[in-house]
Length: 453
Ligand code: SF4
Image: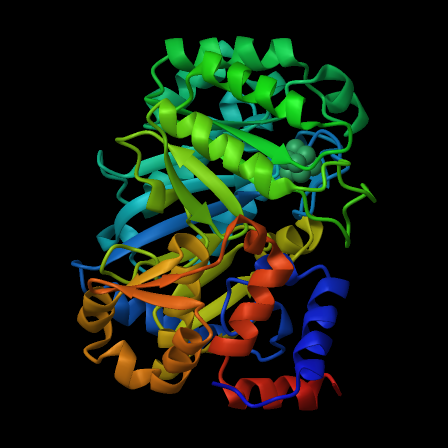
């Protein structure tokens, strides 16, 4: 249990909110606050060594930061696609990035491959073909690898879906956001509700096994009644999973106010009750709720964090502009900006690593705990023991006792359960909780010093 004034915690929180980085609060140590540099040869050597062990499992993430336009609620890094040629240059740069590692990735067992963005479905059929050629040149993608791709409804075309299916894509997820055309126009989406139903049919009928949708909770204009309708319309599509993001304000987000619904907990509860009646299970995904049907590897959808597997620490390798990697005790992020990424890789043959750091064993334990609270609101003590070969109660005696006394944590069989209700799922509350109870005091001291708090 840390012993700082609440003023310090609030100052760190404000720093995170003002830099719009609080959305990444499930990273530990907090990625956005790290200015350390990891040298590329260090990473390269480490990967080369680790990949000799063919029993290890990995997730792979590839970022395509291109969109047709900018949605007003969006906080993710993407750039408006000015000409399709840029994607070809980006694919060349991606190939170059993989080559720069001079590592044999073919031994790597991929649990999942996540192609995210941006809007990866903006790629043409030919570009998708090129992308998968690049990928297969370096990695051995096995039939059991869950391959997920994200897209927008209006970019879904029959031939494109067929191309994905031939390439082994198992899950295609589209950003629906709202079932109200007026709201869609206001938030600058380039699709209509009709496009959603059309895309759903194409995905269902052209060889993709699983289909998912994203919705946003809190958009201006939405009401409790409109969410009742949203759930009914979502169920008409019968998706295999539904991700409900809580609208985050600040930073690059152009929307300034949430919907007038003051009680978002009530909305989340509505989703939970109605969707569970239809057989959906709930899994938290940090600050938002994911409802999924049996069969989906939902852990693979939480691709950004290491340490979330059932009883295993799964590493995630990220490629592309701003992609991040968590690889055992290394965490690093690629450079931002499509042009910079292309220049660095393709023209100058320089690795695109922006920053990163090594984590010690204590950091890894804290990182694991924070990800478990964020994703599952619980920790299985036996699993913790199996991973770290030590007991969580011994490692974090003070923290756990304190949380039990405050009735934030309770014990059930071999699990520690957190009493963070729906209201506590917002970025700020979650970050403050993690900061107060789970950050290393030495790391807090470093932040105080470095950021003059
Ligand atoms: S929400 Fe999706 S489509 Fe809209 S700007 Fe963000 S990444 Fe692009």
